[in-house]
Image (tube, rainbow, N blue to C red):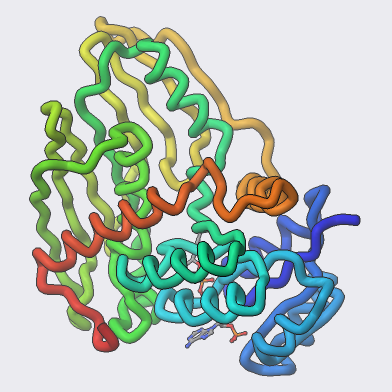
Length: 324
Ligand SMILES: NC(=O)c1ccc[n+]([C@@H]2O[C@H](COP(=O)([O-])OP(=O)(O)OC[C@H]3O[C@@H](n4cnc5c(N)ncnc54)[C@H](OP(=O)(O)O)[C@@H]3O)[C@@H](O)[C@H]2O)c1
């Protein structure tokens, strides 16, 4: 029987997961949770969910729910995840995992105590082209990696979830999390030096940001994200013998490898996908069936490392959310 997944939230990304579950094998949409009964019912009818709930508590009592996907705004992740784990339900939680590292530590500690699976739904970590990129680098096709660049920008600042400090808005937590993860997937250690700047929206959250990581071995990562500009979404990894370009770090479409003389020498395209969310669902199902509480695609230590880096950058800007 396909794995029963419940979704908390009925917004944009909940719909994308519902679409994924409708079309993928091995998992199905068991239930949806909304704050309003009518919204839950309408979502369930549209996407074929077997149950519609207007509270997490009711959903958590459903024995047919084997995995909960959290698709609520950032400040709700911690509380939603804690409730699920307390009830013994495995969790796949949208990015950023929580608002800050302290919240992440709390969630991960409870998962460890209760022996329950939890993982961050940072979909890029689970994608086949990400593996390909890491293999290209590990094989030495571009020599030794020395510099990474990555950017992500969508002019979405008018959307409340993006600008409102009470919803932990800002480019860093919504988009910068992908650029920081891109660097973290190439350079496994922590940077020795972090320099960054941001410009703010009228509400005070960062509208654009730029971050430079300097690593102990001399490697560097230059990252930027924006809620006010449409950027090319490229990621690059430069080594001493060549470089590679990832088209769209948010949903990698292709990787092109260039040699020392700027000649393209290899190209890798993403396989056909449903939405790209199917990989993180499969990883969760496999790990849960194997009795594991984390996935090798996005280990708990990596979630924490990224959260701590983002905390550090926000501290440098003096950007604290009202509930922090
Ligand atoms: N992986 C990706 O590509 C990707 C893309 C976009 C967003 N995300 C992440 O997914 C999460 C949700 O983003 P989204 O774009 O789907 O947001 P959204 O469209 O605003 O939907 C969020 C949903 O959460 C529920 N909710 C519960 N408490 C809420 C509150 N106080 N205010 C507003 N909504 C509340 C709402 O459902 P009910 O009204 O039914 O309760 C709402 O529809 C975020 O963590 C975001 O970073 C990921």
